[in-house]
Length: 270
Image 1 (cartoon, rainbow, N blue to C red):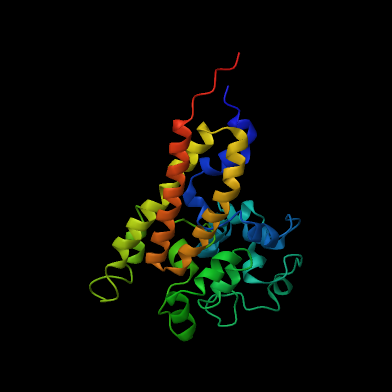
Image 2 (tube, rainbow, N blue to C red; image 1 turned 135 degrees about the horizontal axis):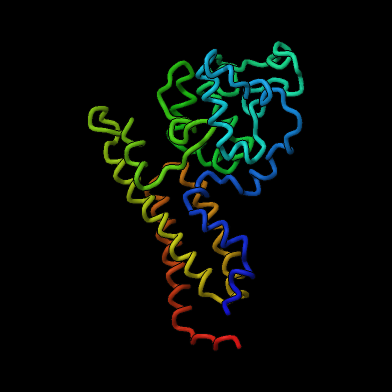
């Protein structure tokens, strides 16, 4: 009997969800440390869940419905964690006091330029990489203009999405296209690099399924930090560097797989 699944249940469950989910680093130590405490009574949720908003304010109603289905809700991240306000106050004015809630207000935590810093409260590693990118430099140099992407541009807001091989080309092509003349080769390059990056999943799962438990545990202590760094470094958008790091990791995983395939099979358990 293969004891791998019993020896490393956390790794098996994590990768069963797919490597794409790990791109946001929702479960990194930094994110876990910053994760809000379990939600108690929350006036934001109580008020905004009222079905009357379907008629009175459809945008607000849809916003709440998206949050209900999101990983943010699963991780106890609610309205006030991103927008500000007082979720313990039952009075509307008191709940909304002391902060600029709307994205149109420059001082708001969710204004276009402030979104990355707000997301960084949980996604610190990703933000650190994003700060090294040309996207970030353009974002902060155009305070009155939306001339560079922020987190929401690629991932959406509230109920986030993760780019995959089927969507990354279209997303990048919003800005990088022949009409704009802004590096129109980028969408194709991003698609190719992401395809290689996601192939890491296949080798990881093979090792998890076929390796001996002690060997796997030792190996994952080497592999997991490298994957986590690569996840974050994607957000530098330095595609040549990401490609090189991806190919290096794939080569390492292939070597481990080949080594396992050369090992004699263990006798079946009685």
